[in-house]
Amino acid sequence: AASEPVPISDYRRELDLDMAIAAVSYREGDVVYHREAFVSSVDDVIVVRLWADVPGAVSFTARLAGARNPKPDARNAGDEQHGVESDAEGELVLRGRTATFLGIAGRVEYEARLRVLAEGGTVTSGRAGGGGVAGTADAPAVSVAGADAVTLIVAAGTNVRRYDDLGADPG
Image (cartoon, rainbow, N blue to C red; front, side, top):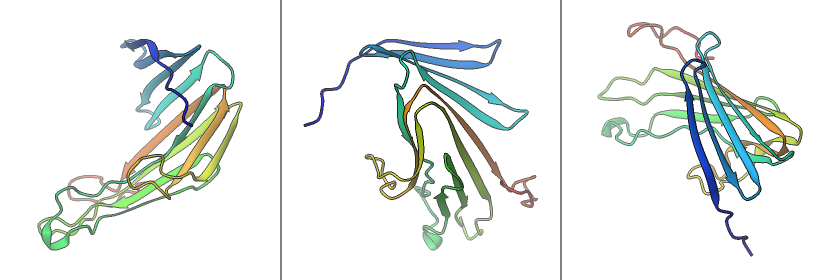
């Protein structure tokens, strides 16, 4: 039998413009969870830090997923490509190429990387099941169980240098 959901309370959002950090905290039962996020333009990454006031309370499964163009060119419907793989323990990589549109071949390539760094607990990479997320039933995932804190680092890039130059390395 499924357990009853624990009510969420004391929800708080903060935006520190001086430090460029967005933060959220909330209470779930006896545990207060925290999330802070910032973007580093120098390193071209998004960093998210998750922690709780109770040791070992941070557990979740993370995935990266590409999306199909909702209005593809009827002549080339669905020729976009994307896939996710686990490069190393605690890492996911999404790679793809855009769809053809109005007879113009999709040539923009992209790559996104997620690295999961846990303090305490366990980190496992594999196929963790869909968890109710469409299209992710057998997708690679990174699961964290019983961590004290976790830092997520997301980097993304494309092969676009300029509108007329697609020669950059998306990775």
